[in-house]
Structure formats: C-alpha cells, structure tokens
Image (tube, rainbow, N blue to C red):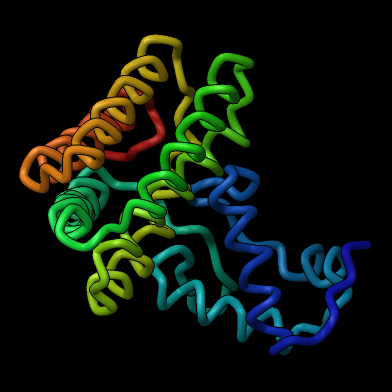
Length: 218
C-alpha cells in the first residue's frame, strides 16, 4: 500500500493520479476505479473525490453523471488546440529567456542537456523525459514572467500525458535530441527569435508524432 501522509491530502492524491495519467498507467477513456485507488493510497473516498475535482479543472479527468469519472479522451481537435496554445507559450518563453537568462542558468541548462544525452545514449526513456522537462522548465523560469509560467504549467499537464502514450521510435527520438542541441546553441547565443522558433517547431513535431500514433480519436 502506497500510504500518503497529510499535506493537504487531496492534493497529494491528485499528484499521484496525475502521475498515473501522465505515465500512461491510466489511459485516455479509462474509468477511474475509485475503490482501487482508495485502497492503493490508503485514503477515504472524500480526499479522492476532491482530488478528481482538481484533475477535472486541469482537463485531465471528466465527470460522468451517476457513473463516476474517467480520463479525458484525446481528440484530434483537442490536441491540436492544446498544442497551438502551448507552442505560442513555449516560443514566448524562449524569446523572453534570452533577454533575461544569467550565465549561471545557461551553465545549469547545459549540464542538464548533457545528462539528458546520457539517458538518450543508454535508451533510458523515463529519466530522459524527466530531465527533458527540467530543461523546458528552466527556460521558462528564465523568462521571468509569472503569468506566462502559470499558463504554461496549467497546460503542460495535458501535454505530458501524450508523450508517455506515444511510442518513441528511434528516428523521432533522434530528432527530439537534435532539436534540443539547437535550443542550447540559440540559448547560449541569446538569440531569442531563433530559440522561440525552435521551441515552436519542437512542439509541432511532437504533435505530428502523436497524430500518427493511433492514440488520438477523430
């Protein structure tokens, strides 16, 4: 049993369920088994249902009248809309980061990039994704824009779950790494327009991979 200690309990439960969704352990369209999750986390129905309300507000879960909850299905239009907005936010974060980033932050991102390359070379997908996300978050933090960060973080939960649902073929993975190499070069040159364009292209490529993966409903 993965018993949870109080923080606000329902927020801890929401974190755990969000992880299950993002990592593909709860699939699009799958019904949320409340009894099983209560037993798994050692909580009652009340914090679980409060947690589901949080995830509903994030667009990850939907309530079915008199039938409980299920993970939101991925539709082509919904994913396109999400990626359109996320691409704009990513691009803006890159442009602003180049105006404000410090030398120390660039050094930190360069180190993260080297760690990510190590995971890629060893074909370690989960830690690769984790460090990859840290790089994007570091660029976002360097933008020095709290409103942008809040909007980005709200949407990023929807994007994260897609990446775990899509099989990462070698060609797609190599392209993603090449994109990150180009990001680092643009960041070190403090070339905002180039970094913004690369980030938008990078996200567009993720959408193209998801579109042919079979996980998105028409």
